[in-house]
Length: 143
Image (cartoon, rainbow, N blue to C red; front, side):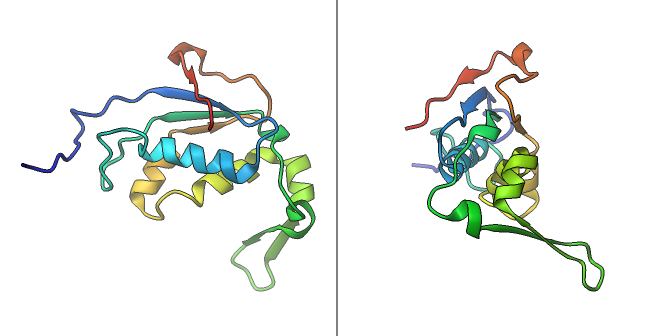
């Protein structure tokens, strides 16, 4: 018996919409990362991008559990001395909720060129409208 390895001829990509309204940020991000990697498919191969396209809507209505809204912070550095920028998640969720969702999902993908390729199949929108109606995306119900 031989082990099946997916390649470009075996992969079919679907489009899925995840509604994040009222759901925890981490759970939505984990499910989106799972779809982007293709772990929900029987042909999943770790070194091949077998994942689907994911559209996350209502990113502005996602919730953070516990005290994360006040305690969690986004850190980034400009590269210059003294260039550390710290943004509390309370500010981030009001001003840039899309960035918070994208950062959470990107952190759950592989940190190599394969993960960067998977990340290109992600679209996040703050509201309930998206621009991919032509692709006929299916609604993905989270468990």
